[in-house]
Image (cartoon, rainbow, N blue to C red):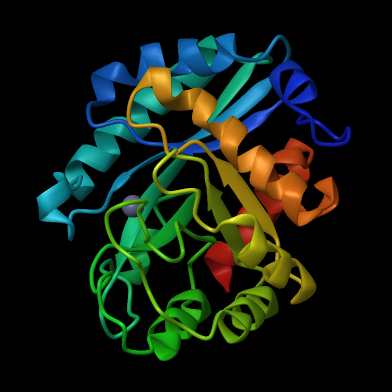
Length: 252
Ligand SMILES: [Zn+2]
């Protein structure tokens, strides 16, 4: 079960789903699971989302490596049964034309797919068509760090966000609130617009190391400031509902 209580960090730590984190080495899965489970006193879930092979600059994971990781996750889930559950995800890359850098049959091998922009993040040209195409693509579950902005680094994607959010809501693709301290993407003001457009949300740490898992608190803070009710946040759903939603996104 995930928390169904109003958003607060104390409740979050009792009973939570951390959404996604990334792990560059399948051998580190065990310590990642230990750390995630240790943040919550009751049952919790987390999603593992390494970068796709298309993002060579970030050491993307090949499909062969993904298969190895999935076997390791299966073993881990058996070990933690009833206390913790790891979901098999991937962070795919949104190309400049809005397509995803993986084949459909590859996407189907994961329980959920985060599609994120990692290029054209310093352009001021309008990229609404790119982002609408990304959230409209079958197999996509979550739009990851939607703007790609970084504090003191780059402004991120420029788009007509209400249109992007409306397209995401139409397919029930969740909008990520990435809690990594230099991202905080999307921030609460944009999240409030996404809420108005009918979007679902995924809160996450974007942790690249166990010590970064508490970054999820930043995402919770932005969700609270945006006034998002827990029912719209996938982290707070019961596991059965969450899994059904992920399956439906994979098939549509
Ligand atoms: Zn990313």
